[in-house]
Amino acid sequence: MRLRYYIVRRVLLFIPVLIGLSVITFVISHMVPGDPVGLAAGPGATPQQLDALRRSYGMDKPFPLQYLQYMLNALHGDFGRSMMSGHSVWDDLRAFFPNTLELVVLAMLIALVIGIPLGIVSAVWRDKWPDQLSRIFALGSISMPAFWLAIVLELVLSMTLHVLPVGGIYDSRSTMPTLHTGFLLVDTLLNADPAAFGLALQHTILPAVTLALGPIAFIMRILRADVLETLSSDWVKMVRANGMPERVILFKYVLKNSLIATVSVFGFIVGYSLGGSVVIETIFDWPGVGLYAVHSAIALDFQPVMGVTLLIGLLFLVVNLATDLTYGVLDPRIRYG
Image (cartoon, rainbow, N blue to C red; front, side, top):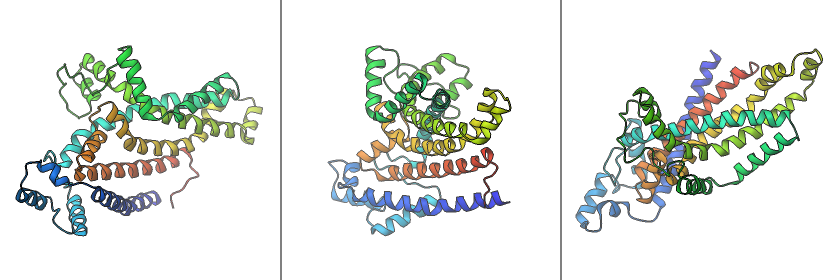
């Protein structure tokens, strides 16, 4: 019962957070210099056409009324229409978001598969060569800007060695596979088409690895510190003195107690990666919500920018809630009051 009330209370807190996020984004979007109506209508538009277009998007009303109308429409699932394409923003989000989610999920899997073993190895072989190499790798991953790393990987692996594609989600010279779920890798497996799956995976590797390097470093550093702290605790020394094998101590007891802080950081990283994928998607021409938002921002098309911001904000809140609930599984001492 406590858990149910905790979830309801946290979900209700989503409302003020999303309202605050929408206000900030709405104000900033309208403070940017330029005329979005003029850009959408084109250079040959007459004043009458500009006024008609402005009225159709409600931009002839006072600013507070524009925001209120937008939020009322959003509550009914209407996030407006793109001024540049005329498409429904909600339809565009449904089309582009699976690509972003698939990229982030693959990047997080890479981060977990590499970051957790590196953190354990670095702690167990403290101050020895595996630890030194892991720490150098973590420091280098955090220090390198994502946009610089993405460009370097493109230049080396794609344009020089021709090992992986330079960008895009699929080979433009090949027929796009039939989509069932919207997730390309999943759909190629459902189609039982290994060649298409391999081609889609090749296009995903570079952006996924670039997006994963930062999280790998964070996970490795946090887990290393927690494993070292747990290994030095009195109860571990007592269990070790009783003759329990070191491998059992490490993986059955130490790792479980050390993962709580890592889970907390990982929840933040997932939410951050959903928003931080904008740079990666732009460089690799990845057709996700990040690239969609960038193109819309350049065109001063604020309706798609608002939709992307609210979607990512909501997902960030959901991921944080899921992270908090995971605490109770890893540590039964945590109670939800």
